[in-house]
Image (cartoon, rainbow over all chains, first blue to last red; front, top):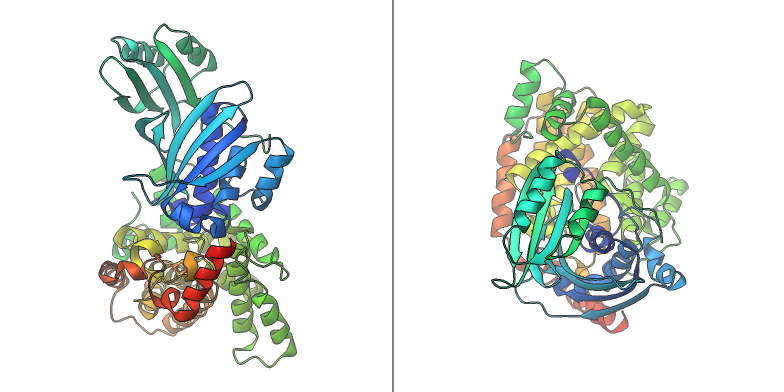
Length: 226
Length: 291
Ligand code: SF4
């Protein structure tokens, strides 16, 4: 583990997995949505459901959705802040098969109508893993720049993406491909060493057969609050 | 790659004729590809965050469950009266460990060291040492590098999460890290640093993780006190020249073995130990119906 996995994070208590990790799950959901969520339906599973209230997991998730970082001292009041800012948040409990004990399933909708469903787990020490995106299994942490492309499962899309990246001198660190069924709906997840230019993301999203492009820039500083 | 044994760490600092903290800084620079300034700034931010988290304590706050809050305030009043058994320095360490443990439970800002549950051990010991010996922020930042170096070795050989290895992995690790850091602040040798880390961990070996109702409150807040007090005793023993018969690396390996043998009921599941007492269960039931 690196030095700052041992000392740190600086965070609002009481639990790195149930509080700090939960803030990060909310935050990554907001970033992937690319906009402030107007409505969020959150289902808590396993230990998140069992001890979440006492650990402030609900407030932590809402805080992340509002754009707060795990050390934001407004986390304890996030549910009130969400109400003031017109963000609708609902919680429920859910049983998930084969999921990590600390897992949340979020369905968020932006004011403009864009939707996202994400399932993520808190692994401990404030580290998280996104397990599902819009119903498709994925695996990424959000600690690197991450490009997610939803496309129709047809030849050529991987090549389009990778040649665009090489053209922009962006090095690919990891790449994963997923699909629900042959010829159906596919997702590629790429983690890169350099940030990807905004116009390239826009170009990608206009390609034929590409359904949705989501980009997570780790350098991006979130404004605090909506 | 970070050091995986105390032996390797001490050899590196000996070969290069640098301090243990300096060896950790160099390792981190190559591990994460960062400059010296970058990692120094980040670690000194950790020190500042620790100091302010201790200052931010509010004795009026209670945790969401109502189980903890106010104890550090009681301790403060008691110390002011001047009759404490532990004396002034140890008394302050106890008070500060309570402050941090309670602040964490009350959703205040803390530094996980190595975890949120054990966040009180290092600041309790270090803030008090800085105050008592008039140490600079630079010295304290260096001490944190030493502490983190010890934690890295523990994480590589065993664990630093209660769910994995019981409370020995959280409070035990924090105590071991704090003990080694204290020795460095008193200009002890690297061998004494390793001895202090070993002794502190040995004394907490076997400690189970049994949080009532699964919350980081009971017994966690008070366990920060024992982690801090134990670190001071271990550092004093090492500085007196007392050796740990079992070397640090083997102590950490033993911690892993003990953790592996610990039933899952004693690893944060709130099914055993204090959580399973009549009172522990009653509290848990009450919270379930009220939360
Ligand atoms: S009892 Fe468990 S939760 Fe509490 S401090 Fe120890 S390891 Fe952490």
